[in-house]
Length: 340
Image 1 (cartoon, helix red, strand yellow):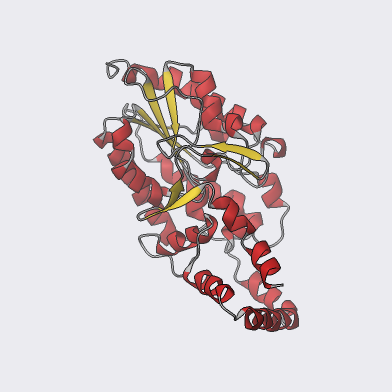
Image 2: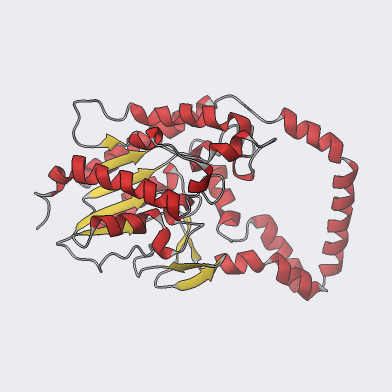
């Protein structure tokens, strides 16, 4: 019985740990040179700890495009060829090399670390930041901190690593205490059932439909930091506001598990407001970067998504096409003098 429970409990963790490994500053990163099937999707990583995009091996003569973000950039719900960075690589062709730095759960905080410590070694000419969902998830989180502390802690479970509590449970399983662990779980389940109605009322009260000014200020600060870090490595930055599947959010009661403090029906308005923090990054006369607001003008429908915000192949194609147009029309002139 102990073996069965432990096997079921650790299944997802073991699957994720075939993809990710612990990292001292980022909680976790992709393993290098790995190929696995996760949720029936092929995931291949490069020897640079990034997800495969189809780009040629590192070549100084290529125009290098670094792509940063969370699970949608990584391509959680699609196979290698259908992630939007891989689709962008196909559109740009063999004179470009798209490097997918995306990792599920990464926010602007993790992207800052990547831009400071990792991206400079790849010498990207263009850096793309698709931001929003993993930052707004921190709305009304009491233990957040100016350094996104609680977000980082939650990344342990998100990437399949043991938190302090779950590590204790693992240790109990290794000893002779499984019986007591099972009894404790049963007792907790009984308490949950007894207070189900009351808990539902409490959860409803604790859902918010209003912005969190503290998170807004940290997000704006982080965006400005990313802009400066891009300038520091002489890369042209493209910031892209977040797109979500509002057809699903609008029809939901309660909250989504990833944004547990936000009432789902309010997500459309809150995210639209959140996206405005990007608008002020570049004035009209500035030519050293852009905010790709064209994505907000596109008609996004339920059939573009695999769930609440991750693109399927159809959505990835639409998104990659918008990024492709921006690079070819607005960015190309900034890179031609950088290529050796």
